[in-house]
Amino acid sequence: MGTFRLDINGPKNPNTVGRDIFVFHLFNDGIVIPNGSQKYSDYLIAQDPEYFANENITSMYWRTTEKADRKCTTDDSSAKGTMCAARVLEEDAMNY
Image (cartoon, rainbow, N blue to C red):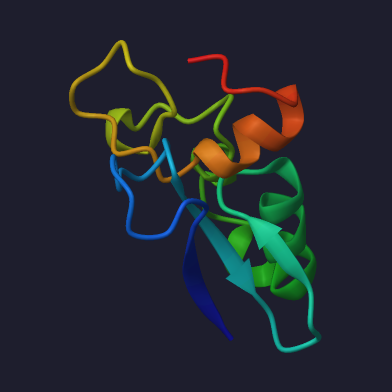
């Protein structure tokens, strides 16, 4: 259905994805899943197994992605923080 970003502190700074802005996906059945979670990968595969049979689905999970711009880290200046919602929820903290 769509992707949305949630800014947890409104207009206050830093207004940075992965710090106070987090990315989620909303599906037609009402399911909301954080971007970069294993659940997101599993959900996509379940919805369209034929399409994802030939896709590298590990790039959709923050722990296994090899795409630098998708990682949730402060160690890599190319990281954009788009998968940080999943990491924060899995680790129950901002460990980056």
